Amino acid sequence: MKQQLTIDPLDAHSLTQLAMDKANDIGVPMCIAVVDASCNLLSFVRMDGGKHHSANVAMDKAYTAASAKRRTVEIGPLAQPNGPLFGIFTQQGGRFCIVGGGVPLWQDGQCVGGIGISSGTVDQDIAVAEYAVEQWTQMQHTSQCA
Amino acid sequence: MKQQLTIDPLDAHSLTQLAMDKANDIGVPMCIAVVDASCNLLSFVRMDGGKHHSANVAMDKAYTAASAKRRTVEIGPLAQPNGPLFGIFTQQGGRFCIVGGGVPLWQDGQCVGGIGISSGTVDQDIAVAEYAVEQWTQMQHTSQCA
Amino acid sequence: MKQQLTIDPLDAHSLTQLAMDKANDIGVPMCIAVVDASCNLLSFVRMDGGKHHSANVAMDKAYTAASAKRRTVEIGPLAQPNGPLFGIFTQQGGRFCIVGGGVPLWQDGQCVGGIGISSGTVDQDIAVAEYAVEQWTQMQHTSQCA
Amino acid sequence: MKQQLTIDPLDAHSLTQLAMDKANDIGVPMCIAVVDASCNLLSFVRMDGGKHHSANVAMDKAYTAASAKRRTVEIGPLAQPNGPLFGIFTQQGGRFCIVGGGVPLWQDGQCVGGIGISSGTVDQDIAVAEYAVEQWTQMQHTSQCA
Image (cartoon, rainbow over all chains, first blue to last red; front, top):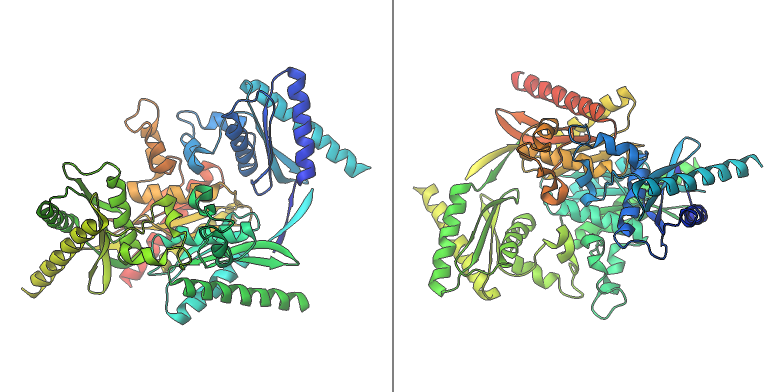
């Protein structure tokens, strides 16, 4: 038996709020997915105007980031033609997503979940995901130090 | 944040051994799958003579038991025509399995994983799964009391 | 290491010819699939006029019969509402087929493959499958005694 | 009829043990899958810390290596844009895996199974797979000569 540290619904709520703040800030409605340490979906929100197919893309970005324990934008280059991971994108019935916008969540050196953003340009998706994770990580740090 | 209690590879190994003991005892080669608290596969064994399709059936029984947190044989009656869960069996691409032989694992009131057995009759599958879980649960109890 | 007895392409050819003979005899063009002991497809023929969807149905009947090591028509009753295998038909992405017309092939007490027939009524499918297996089994017996 | 030589559960156990030894040696927890000559799953182990998505990747690498009868790392280059196998990676619902870490098993000139490793870098996955196959092949040779 072992204990697995993972984000919980409150964390998912915070992360989603932060992502929505940033999405509103840049004026792009987003699809926002959060998975826990087991890579299972904790929450999903499609903001008004978020693209339909982006629902699954956001979920797959979050899944991939939490499972691979790295940003999806870092996996992309390895999965280009002639790269060592070329072809990996068909795995899990095509759910393995190598497009930027998926970011893993860390605490105490453990991967505790992931967030996936989709509906904007890839740069916009990444900006929203990174903002949410950065702010959430800071909140974690602050609450631990208090 | 929260801590999720889950079985680990050693538990999966013990459960598999116990299931193989019982399968050998009744003379029926089995497919044996174990998933952790997150419903992700920890281990799988197809004993010599285990049926090919039973590999997936065993994995899906384990997955369903851990996710639904109940024996698959208890879900079956609810999924009959006119029952409240009729049709549930097509979920997850058909992986949601309502046939007996999937049993969840509990500790301290939490579901910490699941085991799925397939290749015999449903009654044989159930007998092997229940034996493994019963013995493993007793081992857990003993080691905690020691 | 072990040796697995299995039908080979010549057997598949014989079985297909026998099935086509019977199909022509009753005037119903059929889809005819043969799998080996590993449940992998050895041959497939769609006779002129065979239904399009029956291609997959025939392959799935052959697969199921060889893997479950029994006639699909015998599995059907167990998979009815309130039966022990109700719900099994969604397994393998829905490939597990409980409709009559799949028949396993036996030799020396081992399951060595399967045949699946589809495109007629279920009774016609079964008649063609049974004829092919019966004649082929007799041929095997004769050649072994010769 | 013919006899198909294949690895059995004992071989799968040996291969898995050897792979775990090497994985421990390099300090990277791995997912380890072994399929028989028919490409059907014989065994699977996710070591503590092995990535969730790597379970399927390992199974798909083993499947592809045994079915294609070559290392997955050798298939990759042929599947690049403008290569003869470009696009092959979507086959079998995306299970056809062209990423390194899948290695076929040979005996007496026949492909008798395959192993697939996933969770590390591609180079680490390959190193573990090759080690296990090399050691197992030597054991086979030794036991035959004894």
